[in-house]
Image (cartoon, rainbow, N blue to C red; front, side):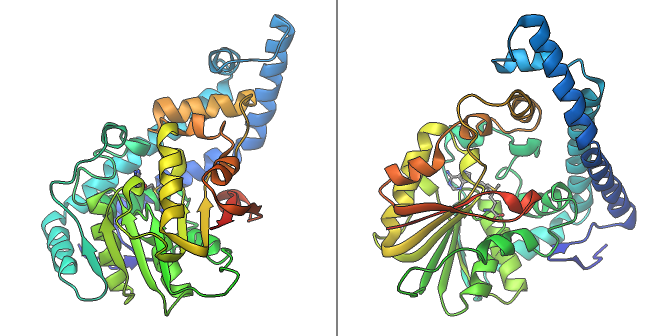
Length: 356
Ligand SMILES: C[S@@+](CC[C@H](N)C(=O)[O-])C[C@H]1O[C@@H](n2cnc3c(N)ncnc32)[C@H](O)[C@@H]1O
């Protein structure tokens, strides 16, 4: 049953599970190849809607009226929802076959002296977090002690096999500018999840003391276990981004990768304030997240974010993309806020950087 590693994650317990999950991943790759035809058909449907009504779809409901009947759009929706369900079901099944062994592995890692991990079995999760099954992962980030293992394989499928060695997190981390004075002694990764950016930060800033915090206990426990396996001494701690358990001016670099679109709008300013608070004068706050598309969303974007909200456990992302997030970083008191060009596809999200 222990079939070793696939990149930095644990292989499925049986070959049958792995080939099933490879099929699911392949089906999602196939769905991606439909994109050009989908965009053409969606564009034509929007034009027809405009001819019929005298205006473009102005609301999400209108976008749904225009696009729901388009067969290729409906097929894509069905593929995305069904493959997501198939993926979680099989990943949970495959790791459940080794449940006791994996739980013991987490307990052993908790006691490891390579780095550290702190978590609280009685942690109070805020309702905006605990009531959502993000990405429709059963139990979301926090309810199953094996959620870290499960999430890791789930994101492997989501990233279509392009992230088996944390390639995407590493690419972003390597683009983050250092503070103007070049000093990087302490680094914080906010909402580190399973620690893929955190290990990339430690690999880049070898001498620095590196911390990762996340709300979910299973995430920080698995992140620590993974870092121990990689021989990287990193400190992980269960904590909320809106109450960072660190003194003022503590870190040279405070980083976060794809947290903010998973937060309600009213929590965002508090988290930005906290990130700025724990950054030292002259230090850097660097954040990767979705692009801002403005309040008047293009109909196709409105449609797909609504699909993600209803069918893929993304309740806050549709509002996030309407916000001027770069402006919110300025409002939080950061200086010289700018967007740094990144790559294409999964690596193409904006990297926004500011200084304290
Ligand atoms: C998409 S994952 C982040 C991915 C991760 N940063 C990486 O480098 O791969 C979002 C994470 O945010 C965490 N999270 C959500 N709300 C949070 C909060 N208020 N405070 C801390 N962590 C939070 C979740 O538990 C989850 O692990």
